[in-house]
Amino acid sequence: QVKVVESGGGSVLAGGSLRLSCAAPRYMFAGARVAWFRQAPGKEREGVAAIYTGGSTFYGDSVKGRFTISQDNAKSTVYLQMNSLKPEDTAMYYCAASPWGGSSWSTWTNYNSWGQGTQVTVSS
Image 1 (spheres, one colour):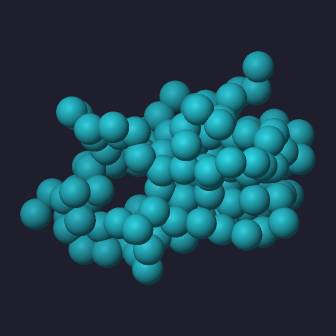
Image 2: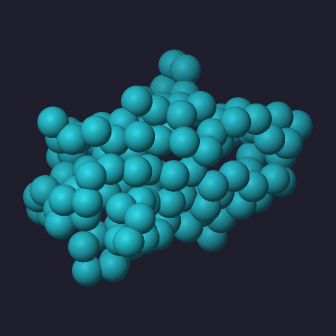
């Protein structure tokens, strides 16, 4: 099992920014993709963003234009830069990795390695 460690969550006012980090063993970056998911109380787990080995990125409709996913291979870290945060972005954010690049990036069951989650709270 791979150890995935997320950090960077916290509380911020609407319109503010946060950067989440996902650190994992280097071999994790040899996999097909890494993604961020989020889950708010009473809601289903939602795909936020994903980055593939070749560098392609994908975003959920609700975060397009505001969030950016990136990868630093030297640091074995994936980032999620979140700008223009809204109260509806409040959720537990999870980092996940999959060695298989098939099917939908936003389907959580396609990922086998998960972090513990980091809480993001956005208030007005």
